[in-house]
Length: 166
Image (cartoon, rainbow, N blue to C red; front, side, top):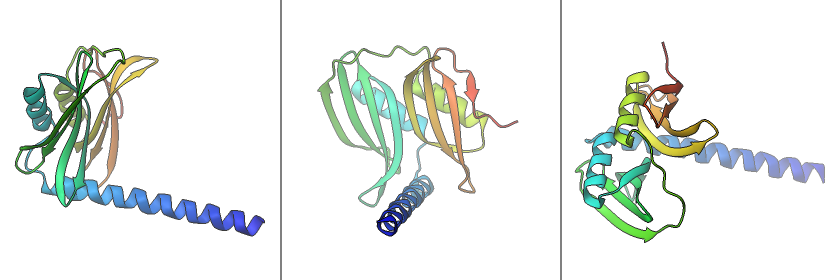
């Protein structure tokens, strides 16, 4: 019984580590292919939808680098994919969401700029979160050497809350 449990636990650990490594490779490949920045992808999606971005992720989808954005305008929620090479919108869908709306003081493009200024890297993931401290943008960046950085930005004023390097 213990051997079966340990074998299962080892397999689960291996699969999780393999998945994390594959995700990181996908992000690095997508970042290497990207011709537009995360902030530019946000601007493209916000212009197309008339909404404000509250989530962004850079990833490989069907062999192409894509920014996947979630945006909100009142109760309308948009899912927009922006080709990270051409800047073209390759998916644009919307639905009604009854969750309360977030009202940050700064937009996602400003949060991305603050995070990229705080550490040497490019944003591959950003999300607006409601925390005990209030609304914050949680960002994940990849450095040129593949090193991962996490920076939290106060959504009220754009100040770096954690993750900045001296």
